[in-house]
Length: 431
Ligand code: NAP
Image 1 (cartoon, rainbow, N blue to C red):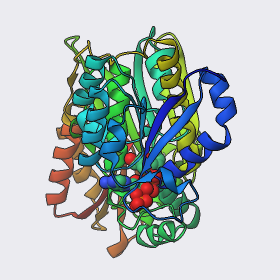
Image 2 (cartoon, rainbow, N blue to C red):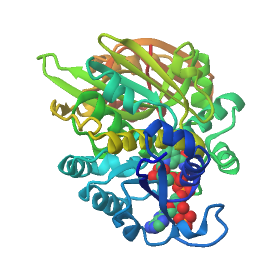
Image 3 (cartoon, rainbow, N blue to C red):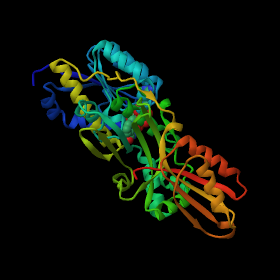
Image 4 (spheres, rainbow, N blue to C red):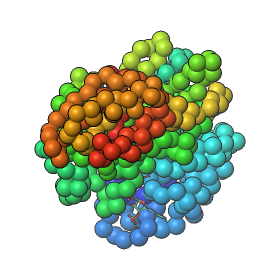
């Protein structure tokens, strides 16, 4: 091939970066044919340069800034992680008109505006398919395939660690703490699992998905978030008795107020999901995203949401697109943010709830509890009573109710003499 090579800087040689470099090297000929020009790695930035990396040692550098600024670098692949360092490097690349491919959801969910504006200014590409749900193509379908449709909802399981933990708790009956240890031992949970188990990672992905789906800038701070660390084996047991399981869901939804005003909701929380819902069958470290659009109807995307090789597949897809644009001229779609929809507060969102309480074992308890729901217009769908004496328990499942009404109800229940404790409150989705 005689075409001038396209220069690539790879920032990071960890789980994802090493797979990106492997595929770029092993599939060089095919990739060149697909792009029209060879893709040549100009350098690979790491923290520590040492010889035992399985790549040409001459490519390694601990100076990512100089690598990004090299004249023979046309596209920068950022797979470092973190926020401040990659932000600076990506902005430097975009300002010089170099296209950027990144897998960094945390950075995008916080600085999407700044990064997209820099890309727009220099007419460079900023691609990030790998930032949401690893190998699963969901960013490009939303941005391009559904560009002519009206997306109403995007809901999914976008964090493999929490899905692994909840699936294992469901299967084995083990509690949260011991399942988290097992997830760490098997490599599904990091040494500090906070970002995953407290829902921060899923919230970043929800922000990215909502921004694209609803043509509105949404940041991680706009996303309502609850993690899974309070889920107990008793919750999963009750879920099973209701023919449900529990999943950490990221939900992005278009909402119309009674006065006809459009708003959006972006939220992450563990929810009961009926066993016959497609998301209930997504187990282990797998991810799935369900998209609902007015003309297309319901679409489901399923696959490996993390891991070096699956994530590298998404990075390479973006890289080929960016390289084709460099070779033939032109660029990918700009950020679409024209709708500027307001974010609805969580209190205004209606869902169904499951409330589990330890209660006194005496007559009249049910009527006292039911009265608190009714006072706030929270209509009850089912009530189950189990145990006796100190172990008496009441599980209430509601019809659709506003989150604010439910929160008030739970505070009131907590104060009742007949309620020893409100053991857990979970939302029910997909019913
Ligand atoms: P990782 O295994 O921790 O690798 C990070 C790499 O970046 C390492 O090679 C490290 O160098 C290098 N690095 C970090 N800071 C640096 C700095 N300041 N200067 C130079 N090099 C630096 O991370 P990863 O799992 O590959 O993840 C990378 C990115 O992909 C993250 O944004 C992550 O959120 C995203 N992502 C990952 C997955 C996944 O399954 N792993 C899935 C989707 C998205 P050393 O090798 O010298 O330490």
